[in-house]
Amino acid sequence: MSQVTYKDRLGTDCSKWDGCEEKFGDKNLLPLWVADMDFEAPSCVKEALRKYVDFGVFGYYRVPDSYYEAFISWEKTYHSYEVKKEWIRFARGVVPAFNWLIHMLTEEGDGVLITPPVYYPFKDAIVNNNRMVIESPLVRLEDHYELDYEDFEQKIKEQNVKLFIFCTPHNPVGRVWKRDEIVKVLDICKKYGVYVIADEIHQDIIMDGYQKVTAATTGDYDEIMVTLTAATKTFNLAGCQNSIVVIPDETLRKRYDDYLTKLRITGGNAFGYIAVQSAYEGGRAWLDEVLNIIEENYQLMKSILEEKLPKVWIPKLEGTYLMWIDLGAYVSAQEIETVIQKQCGLAVDYGSWFGGEAYGTFIRVNLATEKENIRLAAEKIVEVLEAK
Image (tube, rainbow, N blue to C red; front, top):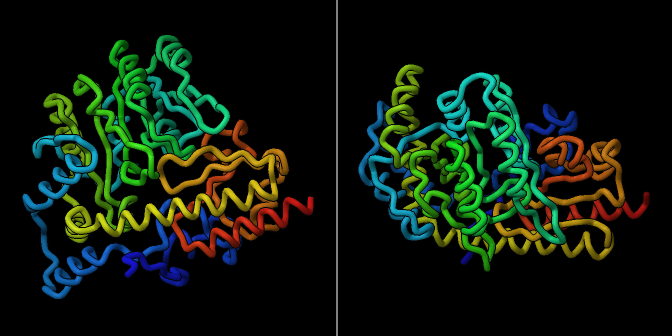
C-alpha cells in the first residue's frame, strides 16, 4: 500500500498554489515553482502532531534529547556523518541562517562567492547585507555541469572573497557533487582563509545511482565550515520552520551563539521540533517512495520533451526534485515568460532568477507532484513550442 498521498492544495493558503496570482498575475496557472511537495507528510508526522494537539497545551517548549538523537542517527545512517550534540544549533529556516552567517562572518564590502546558476536567495542575502556578489559560473558540459576550479580560485584571489556559499546538492542544476569535487573547492577555500556555508538542505533527495557526500566529512575543514540542513525538503515540512545548523568548531559556535543572543533570536516552534523528530524516526519508507515518484516524473517529462523537441537540453538529475530545462532552441529569453505563462498556463521558476540573462531561456520545474501534472505540463510545452 502506498505511503505517499497526493493532495489538491488549492484553497488551503498554500504559497505554491494560492500564491500564483500574487506572483505571476494569474490564479489559474498550474504551479510547478516553489520547492515544496504536493504530498501529505509521512503518517508518523501526522500522528506525532495529532498527539501534541490532543494534549492541548502549547506553552514554551524544551527541545528533548530524543530530537538530537533522531537527527544524529539520521546523519550517521544515511550520510556517514557523526555529528555531536554540542555541534547542533537551530534556525527557523536555512535562508535566515545563511543571512545571519553572512552578516556574522563577513564585513560590508567583502566578497561572497556563489556558483550560478544557483538558488537566488543567496544573491539576495549578499546584496541585502551590503556585501559584494562574486560569481564563478558552473561549466555546462554535454549532460551536466561542473565547477570551474581555476576561475573559482582566481575570483577568490582577486575579488576579496571572504565567504563561499556552497549549494550541495545543487539547486537548480541537480548536481550531487562527488567527493573529489568537494575537496578541490574546500582546499582552495582553506588555502585562502575563506569561510564556507554548505547548504545541504536537499541532501536526502538523491536519485538512484548517486551518493551524496557531506562536505564536512571530506577533510579537516571545521575551522572554516558551517553546514545547514533541514527535514523540510526531505519530508515536506517547510511550514514547520525548523532547520539545523551544524558547527563543529568551538570558536565558530561561540560566535554564532553570541550573534543570535544579541539579536534575541532563540528557540523555535514546538510543532516544528515534533514534526522533524518524528520524520527522522519514522519517515524513511515514505521518503523512498517519494524518490521513486521523483525519478519517474523526471523520466516522464524528459521523454515527452525530448521526443517532440529534440533540441531541448536537460541535464541529468542526480539530486533534488527540481528539473532544469533549456528551451533556448525554441523560445527566446524575451518571450519565455509569455510563452510559459500565457500560452502554456504554467507557473515555474525562470532561469534568469538563478543567474541573470545567461540563463534566460531556462526554466526550473518542480517534480514533486502527481504524475498527471507533469504529463500535462510537458504536453502543453510541446504543443505550444511545436506550433511556433
